[in-house]
Amino acid sequence: MEPTATFFSGFQLNDLWFLAQAAWRTLVISVLSISVGTLLGIIFGWMLYEGKLWATLTLAPILDAFRSVPLLIQLVLFFNFAPIIGLNLDPFMSGLVILSIYCAALVANVARGGMQAVELSMRRAARSLGMSYWQDLRYVVLPIGGRAVFPSWVGVALGVMKDSALVSVLGYVELLRASQILTTRTQEPLLILAIVGLFYFALSYPVSRYAASLEKRWAS
Image (cartoon, rainbow, N blue to C red; front, side, top):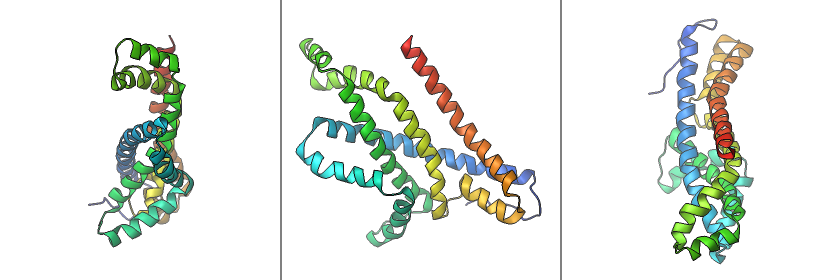
């Protein structure tokens, strides 16, 4: 059951709790979609990296479509057409599906770039030491390539977290939707948007700082 705001004039403490709950829902859908999207993106990136003809002719155009079509259109189309094919999904699940696929489409290019960044000589050296293809991929390609494109992945993750605000068009009460509800009632848009901005900053800043510390640790 979605929480509702108590109707009164002016911004009060209960409204701050209402926004905090919305921030938690933003965090939940963001973490889940980034996690699923990253896993799928690595798999898709590996398929594109291998350069198989079927992947180039089928998978690449599909991923290009998800990267090119505005996310808002994807959300609305999927939410309205899913029941036609028998998928009765609520706004949360619909948003999670599309955000995950959208994230996967972005991560696929990042993952492929990371794999291509690993020099062929290093892979040959690994194979000459007796590593199998999968051992080479696990212990050489993914660790080295992952570090090379880690900053790009962080940018994608933060972008998906902010893009999760678009799920509000489906009726999912996350930060943006909560701010619209409170603004309509209290008529204090500047105050509410400032608080929402602080919530987004509180969600994003730890991620960027931790990512920066990891990069420094790897560089030392």
